[in-house]
Image (tube, rainbow, N blue to C red; front, side, top):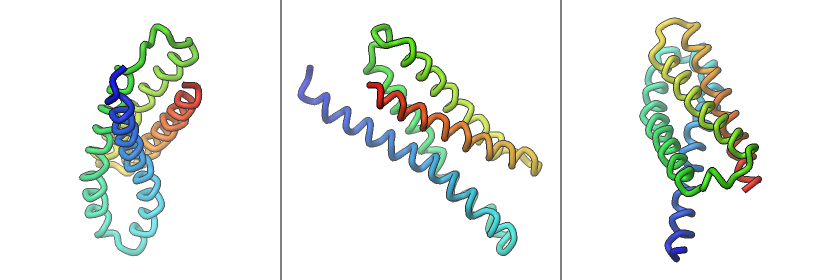
Length: 138
């Protein structure tokens, strides 16, 4: 084992947690702010959405990349079936969160925006819960 491994593990995990915090936490903040903006400052909504997207999508990509990096450090064949199922569900939740958020971003109807945004957050939160469960079992 290299003496560099703990340092790299720390960098990888720190980047992953920061990226997830931006992706998930940002969605929660936006969900809290949008109703007030919609009623008081409707014209600000597109500016806020674009500003969030400039930060959120790179964070999503960073979370996916650091997640893949983390998976490459695990010998999955030596893990329990519970770990493997939780990890598969987490990967699926992350993909669904990204897909739903993309539908929200590209959507032009109120329904697409609402459903895409809501599902994007629900799947992101599910991925976080699974990540905590996986880490706690590690």
